[in-house]
Length: 432
Image (cartoon, rainbow, N blue to C red; front, top):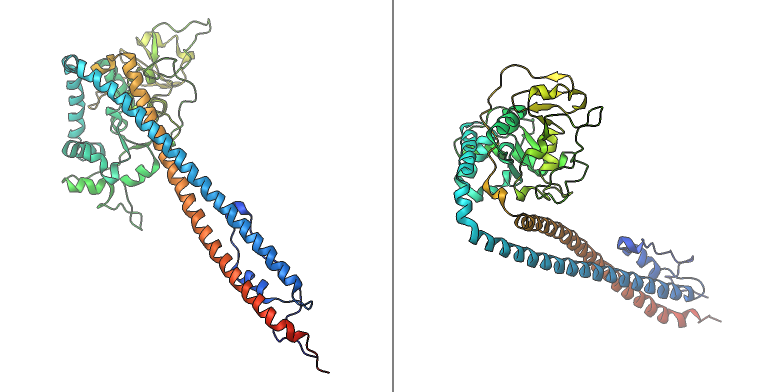
């Protein structure tokens, strides 16, 4: 009596299949084992195994196909939401355009002195020829809006001294002195990626002079010297409280200081962080968490710095002062128990005076706020679309691999069935 030479005793090797949620993949070696194995009972168990694993692979493919459809539906939904945001932004821009058409002459007349103040600040920055701020502003002067497209500085929001405005020259002088020239010239970036782009290093840790802001400086004949401050908005701890309700400037709702008798100290004018006016474009949604410059940059710089009319007013308020205080006549307390005495120090770079556009009606400012918020939402949607597209591409790739495995499994199974049909009659022939 003889048996077919390709018969191997033992049970079929189980097929290893991962969780469907992880876009399962089947090992090609394992699928081939199922086809090659045979049992003494003439292959009946092997046939059952083939049916079982065929159904298993079909189920896996179906589940992966459902995941592909889910990602495709998500992308369609995100695109639909983006189109709606685009339409809403366009509608609001049309409204603002109509307002500018009717009020431009008045704004130009009223804003002459304010523009002069900005020009003076710009001139002082440009005089710092070998500073990072001076080089950055020189690039902006030469290239205009195209400067923002340069890779090393495309993440830059601006320079501290140009990101806020104040109501009068005295406040400008006091705030600038409190912060100091280095901080007034600090460059502000949205993300840490923007910070890294400003300065590139060699393998030994030396600065690569041909790259980053150093390289841009060389391209316009300016050599960047010394250190310079860079502030990263996403790494700052924003103000944790709420904003003043219905305030177009989104001032922070900070509790006023109170004396032991429960009254506000005489001469208290407010908090420095709320006395800086921020352009509407920078009030909202500059960070991934939706915060603007007031709650991040200026809260980081000023904290709860209090402003008083006179030095004399600050004395009885000392128990209430935690983050320092300044007065309009030059008094300065850096922090609890730390006083700055002596003559005032004039800082060349100061905050410009408040522009005439700050007097725009609330509905105008609200429209600008809505536009900035919608643009922020649009950016978030585009990030979600990129992520969803990446998941879709990965799902399709795994589906194609699984499909090829399935087809090979069917081909191998078919080969096994053919072989079994050929050998089966011979296995029943017994020599007498």
